[in-house]
Length: 324
Image (cartoon, rainbow, N blue to C red; front, top):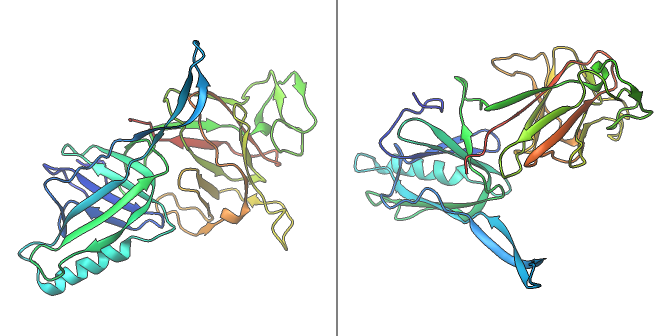
């Protein structure tokens, strides 16, 4: 059984494109076959353009960074059984799917159903379909990726990503038995409800990958003016209404509601009257975010969650493992 909803195993690799708004397009099967020589994985390039390291012998070494190579996707629209009308429909669907100024994920489904993904891909070659009324019109599109990593990927029955790593992040207001209480807290709280030496303190996350990971943060109501900090990096992200005219009031997540902030996709959504299966009543709250998109850096990360109310529920941090 495939790790991706609605996709069954094949004896070749498939590539499922997921647009930033959730729309999907499957390449390599059906109306969009791949060419036999299609190369699915373009290796990352090594850039050594900046001299920043001096060796022990005094010789300057080039600082190196991984850069994503351009990944092309090439194949055929339809086959000999397609009518001209059906080919034109597939052509329009292909070209209309790809937009500028939007990120894409590419999920590769292997012959055994296992899947990996790349994320934060953007167009570098516009989509094209050549020789429209030939038996096998050719298509082409190419992406580059801001994120050079590959990640494990798994979906539930509704097509929602299931993350391999999940950690509960308690609110600072639930910390008990501290020896030292400060005045303003470790993050942006206004109650000073952060202590050291207590139970249920900040959460330590060990990222064993060699690369930084962008997690997904789920805030479960009730929570008021929630803020998350990676103490190790100094990155902070706050949800607030105070600087949004004409509100200038606290941002309140009611009991039973939740906010999901995807650091990689740069999406923030409030789900009110929350329905676990359907996630109904969704509102974009991106304008209410202040601060940084948090990362989990390689090694030790100390994560703090703070909020102004005393009865806050725990929040959740999830992420996918890097596989390459």
